[in-house]
Every structure is written in structure tokens, then in C-alpha cells.
Length: 150
Image 1 (cartoon, helix red, strand yellow):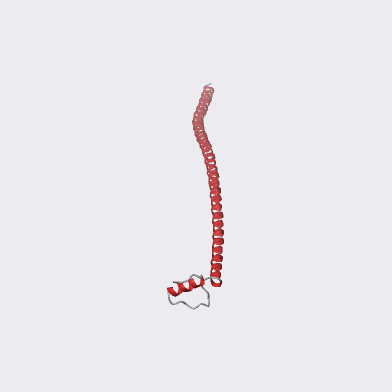
Image 2 (tube, one colour):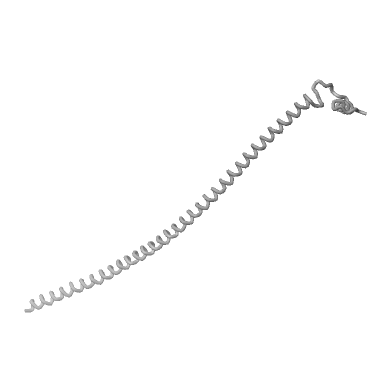
């Protein structure tokens, strides 16, 4: 019987030892799993924070894009206004330059006609001799206009 008691005690001790090892393993696994779960929770929290930041960034990007589109619209409107004003100025300049050219041409034509009239019908003829004094010029002009000099 003693051997059977020894065997029973040793099998009982072995089962207690295996149970203790299992419990120790369970506690270590639980501790390790807790660390893993903590890490997983931290990662999920970081992911959620990043997601929130991404949402904020996308909102701010939308606002920035909206603002940029408004600015671009304003710039295009301003550009169109400037271009229209510039075209108006160019039109005015071309109209003024045409008027000036016409006026210059008319003035030159009038001056040429007047010179031509003076040369053909007027007081001065090309064949006239050059006058020595202003008195002789006045006398010559008075003769041509039929006013008697004194």
C-alpha cells in the first residue's frame, strides 16, 4: 500500500503542479493579453484621433478651396473689368488718333490750299522780286489791293 500511496501522492502532486503551471501560464497569458488589448486600444484611439484630424483637414481644405474659388471668381471679374476698361481706353485712343490724323490732314490740306491760293491769287507771287525793306513790301501789297499809298 505504501507504494500505492506514494503513487497517489505523487500523481496528486503532479496534478497540483500541472494545475499551478496552468494557472501561472493563465496569469501570464492574461497579463500579456491585457498588454495586447491595451496596445490595441491605444492604436484604435490614435486611429480615431487621426480620423478626426483628417476630417478637420478635409473640412478646412473644402473651406480653403471654396475661398480660393471665390477669390478666383473675384479676380476673373476684376480681370474682365480691367480688360473692358483697357479696351475702352484703346478705342478712345484709336478714335482720338483718327480724329487727330484727320485734323492734321485737314489742317495740312487747308495750309497747302492757302499757300497755293496765296501763290496764285494772293499778294505774293513766285516771280516777284525779293523786297529789300518792309516799307516796299507794304507798298507792293497796297498796290495789289488797290489802296493808294500816301
